[in-house]
Image (cartoon, rainbow, N blue to C red):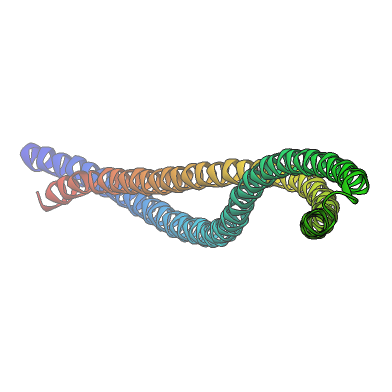
Length: 300
């Protein structure tokens, strides 16, 4: 009977202990279920956050891509515009260089014409002087011939009584020669006067040509100054456009570098969040062995 009482007591103690273990197991199971639900909620929240951040990252990346594409198109359009302007400026510079060459050629022609004009003036002066000297000599010879004719006439008057027939023939012959010589001298003087008038006309025409050339030279000089200023302005504009083009290229390179950096940061953020998500799941999974140990206690 004592043994039965003792066994009964042990049974009650065992039942009480089992009830306590059952209650403890139930509490632990409830706790684990609650923990699992919390972990699942946390995992769901992390998954939603990851998805939201992934979508935000995709949107940000798409926005960056669109911005990069827009800026790239604007930069390409600007580069094409600057290239066109550079082509136009190069064409205008080529035209100005051609004009400069033409101007230099005209200046060379002007110098040559001026030299020719000086030479013609000197030749004209020498010809006029020569004609004047010839006219003076012819006048002197004409006077000498007139003096000779007068002397001949006096001699004829002196010798008229002695040798009338021979003197008459000689006087007539000398008079005819003198008349012919006077006619030749008159013709030569007339020709020299015509040549002198022609040379004067040529001198006047050359003076008019010189005035025209001087006016042309002044006009060319004025146009050259204007085009020189235009060339300087175009050169400065070309330099500014080249500087602006280089700045646009630098901006494009910086924007491309920023785009790559943003993509790298996005990928790093996604990888970090993925690692955190894996760690959370591993922490959640580490609680399941404890649950299996309590099931082993219940089976015993």
